[in-house]
Image (tube, rainbow, N blue to C red; front, side, top):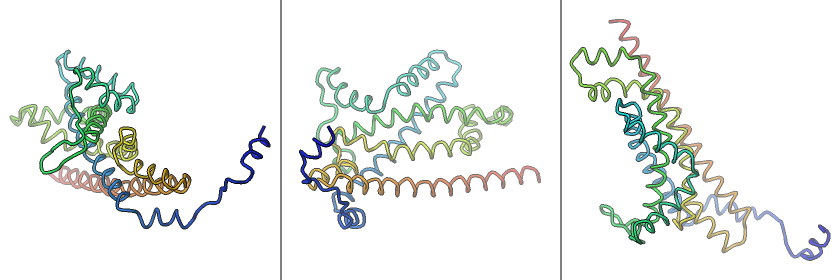
Length: 261
């Protein structure tokens, strides 16, 4: 069977790697590719920030003494951690407007502040933020619970309200525990943005697909876009290491001052 397939193509297909095209793609990117790269980074950052904010609220709900809030937290985690983010993306972008009677939730262009933003991009950021919140909730909850209860008791003894103690005492100390997994989540978010191509957002992978469709150089294009993703995640890994080192140094300084006192 293999021989018949090869005979059918009769040597018309060439599998030669186009080195010059690959190098141009990587080192002389088109304006569209650079714009897609910027869109990828921006979408990842905004989605991650949204996920951290919502995750913090969910973590507090999960630690609440009210059963209704804890139940909401568990239901949220069950759905967003138990279903693929791609399913969530198409559900929110295509399914949610249908559920609301055809409401145009994500029009082609959305005016946000001084910018006009693609509606599909807004849908993607909302989806990624909601999805990320489910993971950040558990990360933040674990960070808060890692702090000794004596810290809260001492803050209350000083007359701080629980909210003030959480903001000024507990969360700053928990940051040292939260930051490493948060950094890993952002690393993952940089790659997750490639799913925006499914709803026609011109991010990095979508632009690469268009280049591949025009040139038919599949391996060179997809290898080239892999280089871009590796550069993004590699750069973030360095930044994350510097942040963790800074937090560790700050923690050692505070501990030394405490012992001296």
